[in-house]
Image (tube, rainbow, N blue to C red; front, side, top):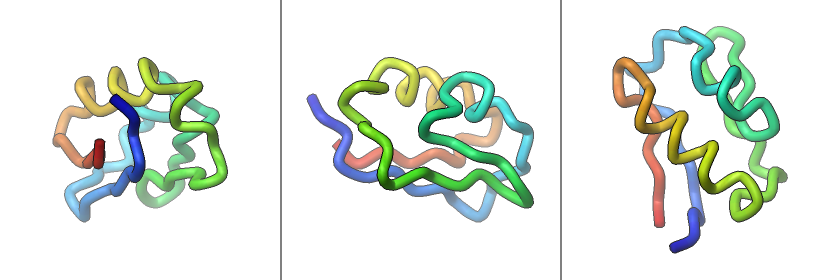
Amino acid sequence: MEITEIKISDDCIACGNCESVCPEVFKVNEKSEVNTKADFKKHYNEIRTAARECPVEAIILKL
């Protein structure tokens, strides 16, 4: 499977977990932001881990 898009819902609490798991793809300021130029395929496992570990399930992956 391949991740084609990542969205962050308004539920994001900017906890920083996604950035600590995959800083190449996620950056947290007021809320998490996605580096759309990142290679999602290269970071597939880390992105999935960040989404799975998000405490408010704010990371939405389109496969």
